[in-house]
Amino acid sequence: MQPVMLLPLDADTRPLRQALWQHRIGHRITRETEGQLLWLADPAHHAALNEVVGRWQRGESLTPAPERCQSGRSGLTALTRRVPVTATTLGLCLIIFALIGVLGDWLIVQLTIVPIGIAGEDLVYGTLGQGLAGGQLWRLISPAFLHFGWMHLIFNLMWVWFFGRQVEVLQGSRWMLALVLAAGVGANLAQYATGTALFGGMSGVVYALLGHVWIMSRRRPNSGFFVPAMLVVFMLGWMVFTMTAMAEQVGFGNVANEAHLGGLLVGLATGWFASSRR
Image: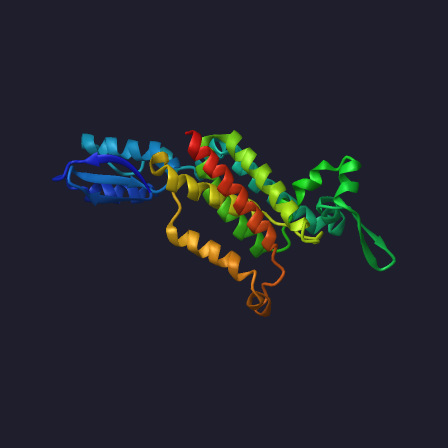
């Protein structure tokens, strides 16, 4: 969480807390020697929090304004304008997933890391060099946008949204775009290096964002980046679990483990670099 402001020790903050929750602003208040310290969970809510606190300090009504609640669509539009790369990434994944249902295998083989053909009843795999020599540069990144099931899609997009918003709001769209491209390409190449040609998913980018945000939150605690420690433990534990034989026994054997690891290494490197130069 990000420390935002210090409130008086004797202030009754119960109405403020209630109002912040009504506005869906994640927060907590701790008692310190100098006063009550207000913490913010999501940096994207900083402006909204200041507005609510200002009304509380002036003794004004803390009920959510009608114009704020009347249209969820306008609020979502404003948010996506603040994080265009994150929103575009999610949108492309959803569009491609929907088109696969219409175009089927044809679209899949256009987006795999290597060209794939059919000879008789067998699949024939080309090489990455052949694809790049033919001008198919998109194959370096396109597997990241391939998802083969709803759970796979939802899980990845949820974490892209959670971590991507932080990166884009706090560091800008260029940083987010660079992270998506570097992590996507890095994760795909790491998976391809193991001899696998048919894989897909945004998981490598997710682990890159996790590594980047975690390093930033550790090395620059006041930067606004935040990731719960238990979430880091869970996601790293999940990555290790899917590398074991037990994962295959319970139905999780077909996981792009090297893509996860490759993405994580990219995110740790970018997080270290960014936290060193800020």
